[in-house]
Image 1: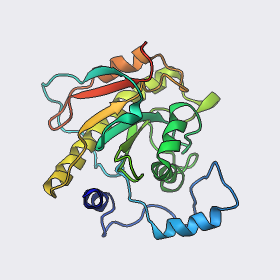
Image 2: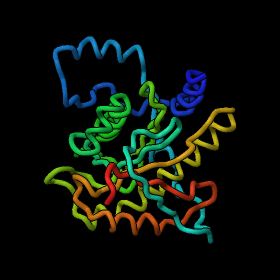
Image 3: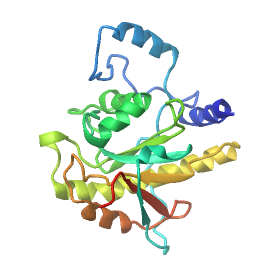
Image 4: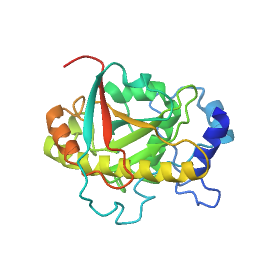
Length: 247
């Protein structure tokens, strides 16, 4: 049954008539490259990864009209974010350089290596960190491609750079609401399509305290802008915030 559900999901993310957006000459950056890369590349060619949903999927304007509905609510939970049940979307803040090198991003990379490869390829091949960077304030939605988890992975592009070259706190905070809005709209579209085909969409949305780790932005600033998002028709109305320790 799991294989049947995954085929429904991946058929949506990789429609047969969709042209490839990735140049053949560019290869994703492998931060942990070894002498076994040749064999890994051969294996990868036999198992093409699906195309994720992103700002490229949404024609402008990408959001439904602003409603008179309530704003997004956050509920707080203590424990590992990765213990989520299948069909859960896990959101975290990302840079546009294709690097999950430390903090919660590294934990995502270790648990979801195929999702990381899709993210990396999107940043490096579909876009390019210097000549054509992923627009900040956007989101990337990756289907469950790593076995045994059944988790969707969502990238919120809140900073172009990372480490010492990360964007300033004001810029990161300003990018947070639009990136979450795009993620929620992508969730709506995924659920609408998958459910029409008899599959199961995204049942719940979790996030860590985005921006508060390696991006160095106080969580309260991000929380305020997220809670100010107006819930549009068809969107989930609540997002779970998970922290391994009680604050």
